Image (cartoon, rainbow, N blue to C red; front, side, top):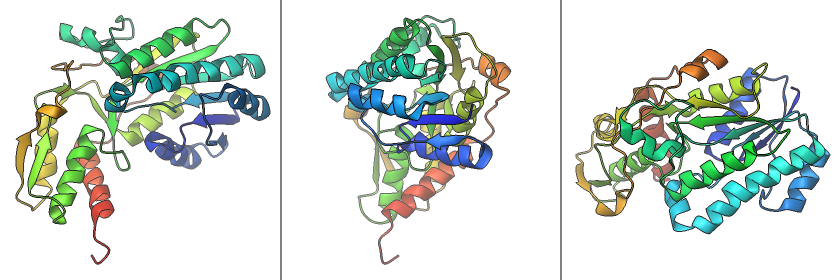
Length: 303
């Protein structure tokens, strides 16, 4: 592989991934243009002009809350936009590897069994976001000849992620309280839910390894996860422990997700074996870096 087309390169993971690839795979010609994947003509023109050897598709409506508020838009981007890319690849660059970043949320109701989900566990998406990702996967897998590799990452976070996600939502509130920008009250959703969390840098390492995978069966799925879960409340306690501010925690019913899963356990054995990858960054380091990011973002100009 010499020429990689990255969609969503201006997003949270995309920015980190571009830095990772430039530092660790400088031989790759990395192209990350900003374009509208729902514009079929524009997509076709770009693929025809670029002729990528590989395409890593990150662009999406990635916040579940945003997808829930605007499901039609989420469907247009996450499903039709993805199909636009795949059909353009088949028409203009059929030898291109198509790496689709889906989500472990597609397992949905399967987590209720209390066992770690594997790539063979049937998808049971529960939310509008998860349903768009599952539908996009199914649509891609039905396209003959597409050199498709599907990645299903667990929750991942780090500096630069927006407050629509739980860890940066906590970190931003703490930073604002420290700056005196809001009362010393931090609002939360369900603190007892347990989730598999990865640092964004570890996720980038997994994606880079997937791009370099020598061979795979078209349609192959790899779960990308730590293989352990963290209680949301415990993550909050770590963040609170990093602050000298006196903060009261209050539950906000509006932040409760209607299809809450008590624990989402993910088996990432196959990815570790196939990619030679393992997560390396401890969650405490991820939380500290995320809080520092939000402290800098919320700091007053006079500070």
